[in-house]
Image (cartoon, rainbow, N blue to C red; front, side, top):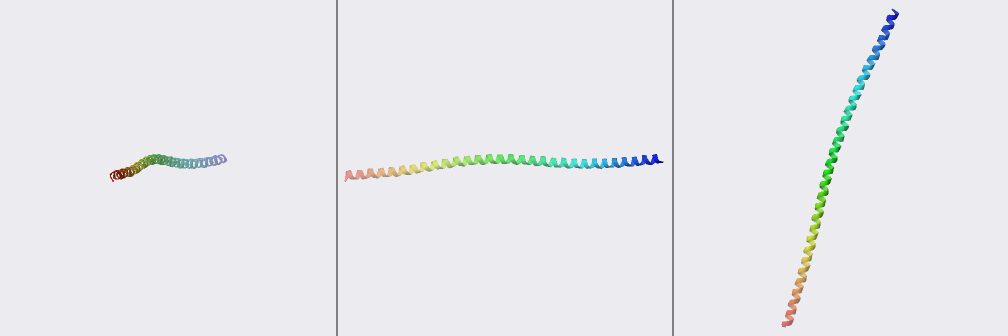
Length: 110
């Protein structure tokens, strides 16, 4: 009977160890699942970040292009303004010259 009691005691201890190992395995699986879920979330976040960076790079390139185009348009407008100013000055000079010519003509006649 002692031997039987000893064997039953050992069997109960082995069952407790087995049950503890099963619980540890389940906890490990749950932990692994949580880690996998967290990893997927991190990967998804990284993917979204990459998309955002690509979008920002495209927007930046567009803004640079628009800035360059606006700068070119401004330069052309300034050039046209200078040309018009020069033309006005030339017209004034021409008018003064014609006025001088008329005065000279009047002096000769008169």
